[in-house]
Image (cartoon, rainbow, N blue to C red):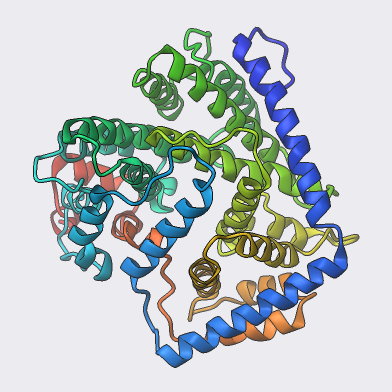
Length: 490
């Protein structure tokens, strides 16, 4: 953010905005996460809530996740919370209700693919899970997205493919699709609805592609040298601003060239005024990501340094997804959005703790674990405090609390599977060291024979399983040729 090469004017405007918003995030963190008695009160409140959730799981004998129910809960409280101050807020439309009814069984039942499943068959199954709720065919979903997925599989590094690179794209597509579907009103004409959904699907694809091509590659130490990483970040300062003519020597790398192409084609979906707003939001997300990526485990950081970029990164991601649907959330970043960002960033980071540490990715959890001397505020206490703040301010506390606590329970089980490793046990012991009562409840949750499936993850789990079962670049070679696993093995 400090290099002196000539950047688009909007870069400097967005950077000034980001600094102001980051200062507000610092104030939010100081006001809510420095009062130890209040933090301990939230710990007691949320530990009690987790205990109740544990008992509910036992009493109801819920040994597997009802994906349909959990997904609907998540949609419901997300939109009640995030859009309650929007002038254009409306009740759920006929389009969302039709989608939920049509996909009821698909959401409930896991997909068990045949052993000789092909790449094209997997992609067809994935796109069927986000089919618009009308009878007419959707060429964008049935033809355009599969074509783009095949192209992407050729340039995403194999190890990132195996860690869920394609699944991440589908999850972002589905998130943007659901935002857009919910934004439709019951009296929205069908043709207008089709156009809005088509653009949302395309936008979701390009936005999702940025995760494996930018986040995952830049976070990894295996694909780009530190010099090349800095060059990619410098180029992104130009590309995000719409300047794609800046000379560079990295276009020969397929992943870098694909990243540039994705941003260019995303912007082409929008007119000049909309594009300017999208560029500004994209810069805000980029600045948060850059600041977050510059931290290293083992060094001392303030509360603001650890959490402000992370919560802003999650909040800006959600704002951009909403923006693609036509919903314009406030960019003033009130505390509601900051709480949302912090809760869901930590919810994502907790189960990935071991993988993040192995990959050298900085999170509040990996940082706390790696600190030998003076330790920062325990991230589990921050997590519980953020959950408490979020739930207390929600319009439907019961729905919000149950949906969130179920996800927390699932993330605990995901982090600590039945074939738990000594490393996982060690990580959990360190993170929960300052909250003995939480540790007792977490250990009880771990022992529940519950399928550790997050509703958002489960819908597109088959594509992750498909890529994990291959070695090297075989999956997209087989996919391009339409071969099955059995045929490729021969």
